[in-house]
Image (cartoon, rainbow, N blue to C red):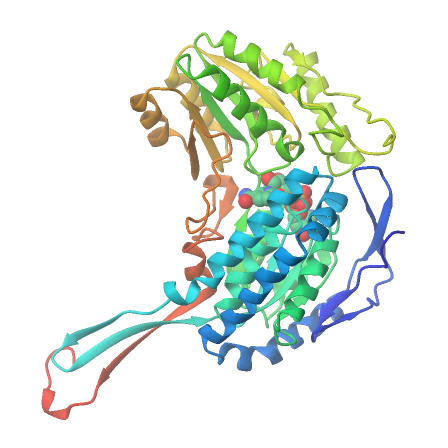
Length: 485
Ligand code: NAD
């Protein structure tokens, strides 16, 4: 085992879990055992909540301009430890070095946004009647929780942690049990940056801890990122217990490829979108709607896909189970009459035979009722559905229950605009395969890809992590009385 067993983190230090059950943390790159993660108990969650609760009064009473200083230092530490963090993300998640590097870069960008928070949250003031002023201020909620998935071990925790903490909350983080190591390093860096003990806490575990978080009366708000199935449960449980909740779910992102699209730009973008991070991005292209004759573009996509090589510029998928699930989808599509143009099944990387790799896969002549057309595959697979008209393609996209992202490839502004208006998704790309809105724009899908009123990052997150206080004041008795004062 490369690292010591994962511990929980509260009161500003690491604590060995009292759990009797633990899971292996396996590197998808080569199947090596990295660590063991405890399936912590609710008793341990209670200790973390108590730690966060005790830290809240002092932290929330610290002026935001002082709180934010910790995050300037944290940002510096992310840069200082850049290579080490990149290696850790790659090792536990299976990403390539460049992809892991991008994840650390994005974590830095997220922290920079949190550092700008004092500029964004200043309230409003207006004289609403003669001598009477109304003003608004953002107040933190208290102890909040963040439950995160496996596919971005460092970035997704940084979607929530810096903003929530800068805004004065204290937090319980529940990492994915598949990739718990990056979060631990995050806690160490926050401590080094000067974050007071108890402001940030980590409890490792699975379902029991998630349910415990949703039920805990000491927790005010829950953010969740993961599959739609669990997002729905978390949203239902947390709101049933009268907590504020935003729960981001899975995705089935559609790319509209029109005959006038630039072939090279389209092929490289489609391929990068479907195969980047081994297709394990909620923004990954999963279905391509080929409108009219786009055969030359499809041929180019296949050429591009063949340049993506497992173990070189393509990372591993998270687990053996994931590899089997993804390959199962491809096999089922083939049996149902789809044509496999590029086949990524049975990929093996020399010297890393226990790694879990799936090669890039292009499936053509997929029909709307096939599983590969409808379901999230979460692997480097693109399903091509052919349509005669753009409206037919939009109908297919609109019928899908997810709604994270959609993109259109065309040189026509009018047609792009039509897709922008009619695609039922929260994030739209025009000639961009992975339309992640960068800070200060907020991240969040529609439909079954997000439950709750707010996006999870950017300016929208301010509304989620704070409550607004409206104060009306009058100091001058001579102002008299009117209907509002
Ligand atoms: P997951 O839903 O299996 O797990 C997410 C979290 O929920 C983990 O911390 C896990 O421990 C916990 N969990 C798992 N099963 C649970 C249960 N039955 N009850 C309570 N908690 C449970 O997701 P994952 O496999 O880690 O991540 C991949 C999924 O996340 C994909 O569907 C992907 O699209 C989605 N995702 C979405 C976004 C987005 O922004 N919409 C971003 C990243 C990932």
